[in-house]
Image (tube, rainbow, N blue to C red):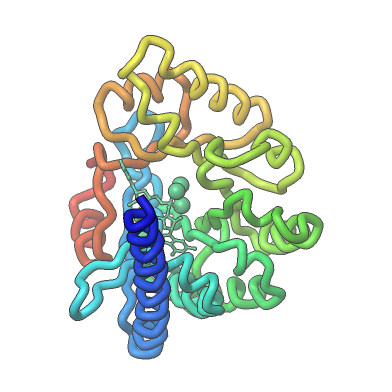
Amino acid sequence: AKKAGRGRILAFHHGLEDEINERRFIEQELRLALAEDGLTVAYQPIVAGDGLRMVGAEALVRWKHVVRGNIPPGVFVPVAEQAGLMIELGEFVLRRALADARDWPELFIAINLSPIQVRDRGLVRTVASALADPGIDPSRVVLEITEGVLIDNPEDAKQRLKELRALGVKIALDDFGSGYSSLSYLRRLPIDKLKIDKEFVAPLGRSANGGVILQAIVALGRALGLSVLAEGVETEEQRLLLRLAGCDEMQGYLFARPMPAAAFREMMGRGLVL
Ligand code: C2E
Ligand code: CA
Ligand code: CA
Ligand code: CA
């Protein structure tokens, strides 16, 4: 038993070491990718509540590593946040997405902001400059934040969001319902839009009461005067139920996957109806 116990401890140490090495590797390679233009931005269509017509697109950062292939943002964004690279990564996405969005003036463009960016005093100036360079109408821009912005200094975050809104951009609360005490955050944050996490969309159509929470969230958003978007829509049944629930917008693999700018431009060329 003792032997097995030691083995487990050793295995644990090895696992930890691997993890640390992996983080170090990602961090080093990410520094290079940022310096050498190795990141790209993909776009996923957002459709109107009827699920038929495109109204916007979400910008999602992509990284294709020469050896490793595609490394998902769920892996490297947290590393960027911890390694002090998030401001730079975030500015790259802002500038690229707003420059690309010039090619599809009929759509709004949604861009994710890390809580680290929201904490940054330079953010408002960066956004203003990224808007001005390609001459993007700020009312076409939605900045997606998460409740994580409230962790350190909620008053500071609120102030920053107010300044962003004063530029004319809109603010969406992303992943709504997936975290903690989301209801109190709703009252406290100056936001325009709710993005309902896919966790609440997935059960739709699977069980009889799978839609109860979702319907309640949509009703809540509407009562607060917010626009409501459901993400992770994968089936026709989910689309129908979300439409019945009164969702304003939808996004998910049912309509289209995120795609490179060139493919998105091509799709736009065929019109707004998917
Ligand atoms: P998110 O902001 O919630 O983005 C939605 C994620 O769901 C994207 O994953 C998208 O590809 C995926 N998705 C879209 N439709 C469906 C569907 O029907 N089913 C399922 N299962 N998934 C769907 P992705 O691109 O891997 O991004 C993951 C997360 O990484 C994002 O979640 C966001 O938190 C973060 N992220 C991505 N790009 C950026 C960025 O430019 N800046 C920041 N700060 N975070 C980013
Ligand atoms: Ca998002
Ligand atoms: Ca989300
Ligand atoms: Ca998410």
